[in-house]
Amino acid sequence: MIIKNKSYYKKFREWWINYSKDKSYLNNNPNDILYIIFFWIILFFIIVTAEIWRPIGHYYFPEFIPPIDGEPYTP
Image 1: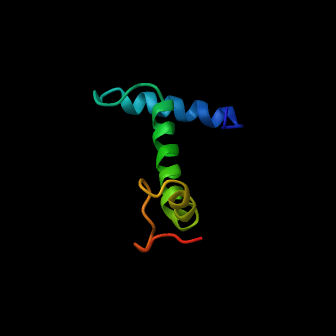
Image 2: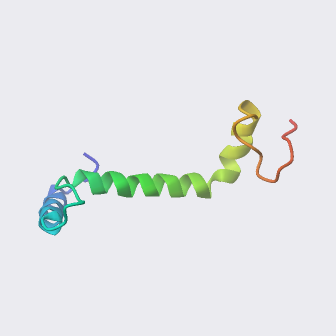
Image 3: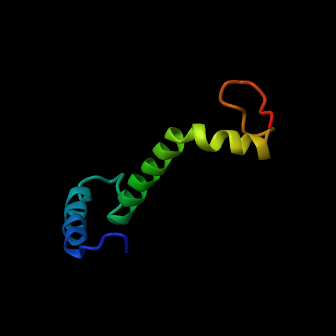
């Protein structure tokens, strides 16, 4: 488990279950919100670090990943 202090997770789980009781669009599983949070964090880091991975990706997959400035990559 990622969370080392399990009492925080237990408090979060209890809060989430109480919070989601009257909302039909939310699931009672608190792990769902953690997955959503980690998804947005990973997406944020992918966007922030695009200058690092995009030239590498364009070198190997030029038809799928365009370069940042529109210029073709030349090694």
